[in-house]
Image 1 (tube, rainbow, N blue to C red):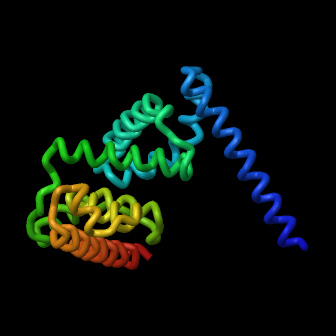
Image 2 (image 1 turned 120 degrees about the horizontal axis):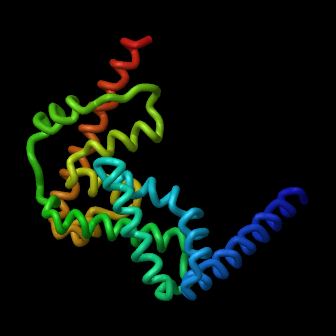
Image 3 (image 1 turned 30 degrees about the vertical axis):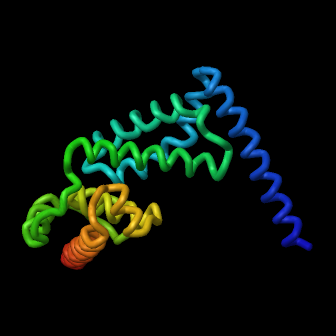
Amino acid sequence: MASNSLNSIDILVKSNQIENDKQLINDCILGKSEAQKKLYLKYSPKMMVVCLRYSSNKQDAEDLLQEGFLKIFKGLNQYKWEGSFEGWMRKIFVNTALAKFRNKNKLMPIVHIDNIEKHIDEHLNIEGNIDGKLLLKLVQLLPDAYKIVFNLYVFEGYKHKEIAAMLNITEGTSKSNLHDARQILQNLIRVHSKIANLNE
């Protein structure tokens, strides 16, 4: 009985959240600045995490965040209430990040791992235990082509065939970039662990 009651409460809470979001989104479509501010404050922390994963530094992530929200506010009337609103927003931010990288022509297969790791080691300055924040920092250090494939595969759940089509690369390149990205991250984590042990 207690389990059924908790399920009923969860359903009621989710229903209220959906209704609140609908009102908030409709107000944003009408151009109400207060509603736009509330929407931004509600979702910007989660979307900032997405932006950070696709950026090399905080400034680039903040620029991506602003650009993504501009697209969201302009395209809110295109949301069809199918699937979660947060998921719809997330796709816009991912697509915005991919567009920026395509414009910079940074999606070609890249260089030797040894050279990359040497470059990353020079910029490695992290402390503390391995956690989500550390992983985010390490992902930011990856070269763009590796970073994008890693994010799309690991965090967004795309298959290599889908990634290849999105980035106009071969499936083999997608698989190779993911493999190399993981290898670099594993090496960086080992380096971090050694530094942490030395500081104990």
